[in-house]
Amino acid sequence: MAVAVTVVILANIIGYTLGVVIFVSILAAPLAVGAFLVCRYLLYGRALPDALANKS
Image 1: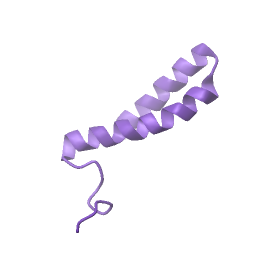
Image 2: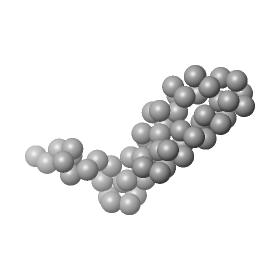
Image 3: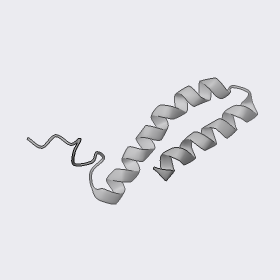
Image 4: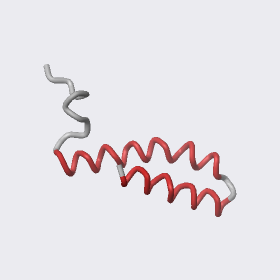
């Protein structure tokens, strides 16, 4: 979760300095979700929690 928050904060700082906060914030949301999933995969071996994973 901290990775996703960090991505959003950095995107907002960069967007503010460039003067395009709303556009960067819209683009940062999917990047934050992706960063969260990658970090979770590296830590736990699965990108999604067991309750959301498809166990066929």
